[in-house]
View 1: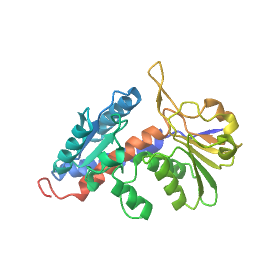
View 2: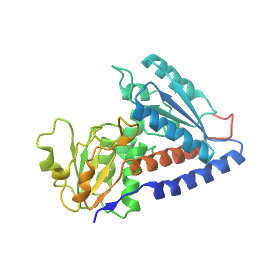
View 3: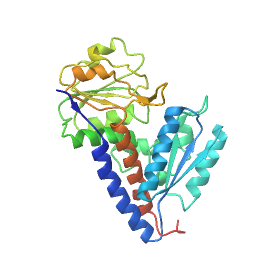
Length: 282
């Protein structure tokens, strides 16, 4: 029987930690503050931003959403927020305007406030094994594996998706856990032949239903990172639900990686706020 890797219990534990941190910071006179910069009308993205704002309010973190329409506006907003001593965490929400590159825009986020690990400096430090905020979704994948006691060491892990916010950082985190890692993408020929070799399969391609039963070996642990908006206003993953008939464990969408990602972002904000001095100090 397939185990459902529900993320809600783990997310609740992380949120409780973030709430305790936020309360302590507020009592010390520096209430944590998150800013989200967005330039999209994509419904899946909008749903995610709304979930962040609701979750932040529940744990005592102020959250502002700054809507911009151009690359220049995004850059200006990120620089302004980076210089604002009252803001402790900054998220640049994707997708971005046509022609814009995440690496270029995210470079305007101060590393100490880069709570989603989007600045190339943060990513470089991650690869080098140096302290930095890890992209929250990538960190959530590893947190779920830990929570369900899925060991990566010595296992074959396949990551479907090569984005700098999920696919690549997940691969590096799995390498750090001594897994043997393969990254696949939209131009990988004969994808099922590769994914079927995985003991751990992480899917973050942004294509609903991409992975079906033929892609998965019996007993594989499958982490579905997909968040694709459906016609009825819901969310669908990148993994066909029929995979549950084959996999040993499968994370649901929604209710899997998503809640853990949001909770980790909130904890990152409290960590960033705790690392600063009292309000008004640089």
